[in-house]
Length: 191
Image 1 (cartoon, rainbow, N blue to C red):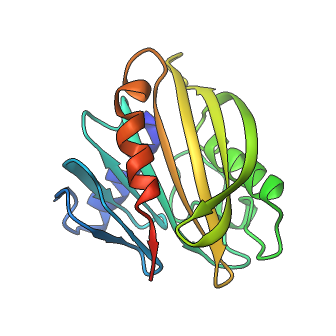
Image 2 (cartoon, rainbow, N blue to C red; image 1 turned 90 degrees about the horizontal axis):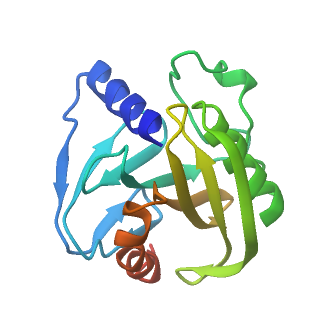
């Protein structure tokens, strides 16, 4: 996830746009399909990858990644990935995917950034706002050897994939903000 944050930041810098913004603890729109209540102040690192990343202590320690409106036939991760597969070779979302297939798609997308030993658990139905969606847990290891823990939740809304993925170091940061992120997730309101 650290590499994901660095790559998202580099992508935004390359684009020459405003990179870092403060997300105040008030209802905030994510993409064009939903909004959340951040609960606390986050730093937002928007990028041209189709995702947005929020962090408190640094993306290598913990972050929320918002997958925003991936259309049928698009990869989850768009744009440049240093040393990664070209966009046409990346796993793509299909609007008829089952929750299990979406979980595999997200795992394959995480692997694009060099994350290793990715394991998933507890895939189950869950609400994403008012939409019927999915939720699962994930563990992985960064190239540096740092062990990470994650939770992912999302839904297909109007034939587009939306998801929230929270990850952090297993030893400290994942549990530190988990309750906050659970409240963020519970606050999802579809537009």
